[in-house]
Length: 253
Ligand SMILES: NC(=O)c1ccc[n+]([C@@H]2O[C@H](COP(=O)([O-])OP(=O)(O)OC[C@H]3O[C@@H](n4cnc5c(N)ncnc54)[C@H](O)[C@@H]3O)[C@@H](O)[C@H]2O)c1
Image 1 (cartoon, rainbow, N blue to C red):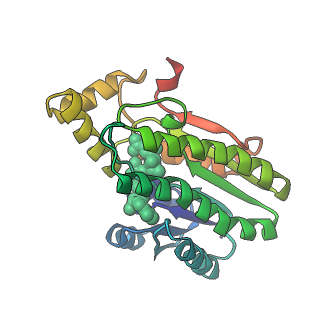
Image 2: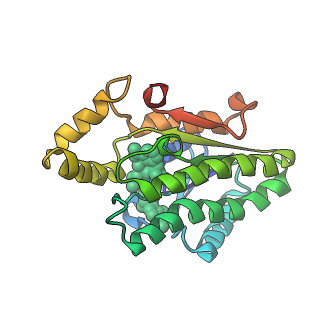
């Protein structure tokens, strides 16, 4: 059976993607720091197998070791979804050094380390599909999201450079650029936005976000997972180096 490696697969968009692939019979290796949520996913019933490998994507040797274990378990990965990421909002006047480092280490270096660990296996196989998690913030700016936006812009550029390097080896590389999705990550984002702009009213902050999108609502994780799945399949065979907005019309305005 074909296999997939998904980083940040324990919750949110990553978990929805694990469920999508595993329900379709893929064997899925989940690399994440959240052992509790990761093991809970493993316990769900799917037609494909799911294995959890506790991994901090900031640590290159840990990523290498987990990819080796995933390959030993499931064989050469056909698909990689490099999705792990964090968000910590702060204005340019408030940024803390440790937050700057964590965002860059996870959102940018983590993606790089993951691709670097998986790409040699795909090169050997002469085929593969890589989907990177960028963001609408690869395309637009948002309040308090300076460092996060910079990392997502960088992931968008990585997508293109990797597509150039890996294309001749039979490996496609694309990125999804979602607007706001209801996940544990955005719960904290909207608490911060509510404090800044809505006198602490979190519901008002979410309502304003929904109104800013042409579809009048934010996304559910599965709506992003469906696009990730499409980008990883032969039905998208003419796509590589693409940054795909999944954004309810945000960037159409
Ligand atoms: N939710 C949104 O609105 C939105 C929009 C665009 C892009 N994204 C991106 O989607 C990705 C998934 O985010 P989400 O919204 O599903 O949030 P989430 O917090 O549910 O998922 C992030 C996952 O990454 C894992 N993770 C965090 N640090 C890690 C580390 N050091 N090593 C390994 N795993 C780590 C978390 O445990 C979690 O499972 C992120 O890259 C995020 O930037 C989210």
